[in-house]
View 1 (tube, helix red, strand yellow):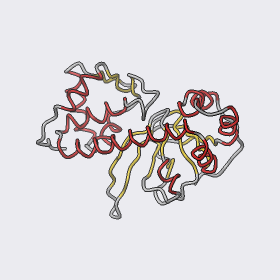
View 2: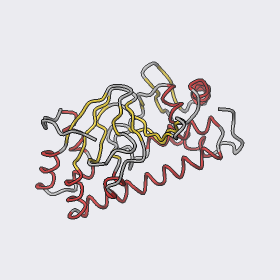
View 3: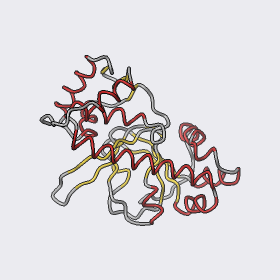
Length: 242
């Protein structure tokens, strides 16, 4: 649960809010309320941004950095659901239902996040048609992502799963600030694709040889988004060892 602090927003947070599609659809009074009430926090690698089981009193957006959304079983097994990049907003379902959060969100690198209080979220949902349209589009895109992830985990070989986890970061409804260069390492790719770092490296090398991406020390540059889509869609139904 986030503790409110002095509301001094960084320039990058101001830019992120102003470029968010849902903010652009608000009235001047609604937009002013958002900028007045939103809370900004910075997290170090490994920090919890959101914790499963906590009461959800804020809607959360990522300004800078990279994080993962995951679930854990009682015996400690962890499954990564998706990555959360700059421009991504999440947690709207739990905010709407005002229920405990069902997943964890960890910072994978230094990450800045913003938190919109639930009472402001509810007010916008009650009065703004544009905000409701944004939420419908966002929740529909997230549902499509999770259905696709489940299908790909069950049907695709490991190389195709790695391709899918990367190409999913270019869904403009979920990742409006997606850049062809993704600051993500092999370990993080492995977490997103639910494979080992070593197996993720093998898949990335194959995709690089095919001219679909380029791997360097600063991350991964996607050279052919459509080609990566086609590779993921053509994945074998017989899974490779992970």
